[in-house]
Image (cartoon, rainbow, N blue to C red):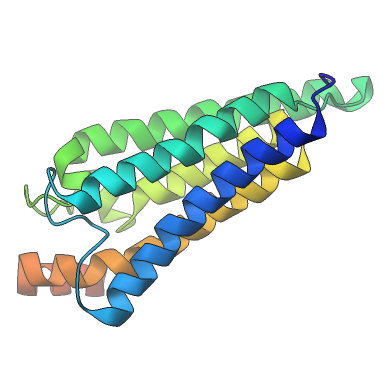
Length: 190
């Protein structure tokens, strides 16, 4: 483990945690108030899209830095298994999440109406990107092996657990009966 001053670790953690909590809080507030839509954002040039992207970066970059700077090595007897499994889950999960996102279309993933996807991975799960990302996050946590990183990854996972609640009304509005039929036939996650 790098001898990282605790104030740096806690500063990175605080920035990341407050950013992801702001995303979750704004999303919940938008749904409860009904006065605006936060996620998915109404358009790519909206304040909601810019705010979401800024907050997500303020979450992700400190998480990456904390993962590298506060890395806690594993006992040699466990290292090979933990790092092999961790790396495999990280690579497979995030590669699959990116692949599915690009198949769906980047703009479609961020709230623009570019067609309802119901085939391929979307025939198994209505949210395969979130499921694949969870797999990647488990690998990330195994590799970083630090409590603060696990807490941040858990907050990210919780955001993806809540995201369909914010997205589904928009999808119903955009795609109507086609989405309702798809929703009946396909599980939310697995």
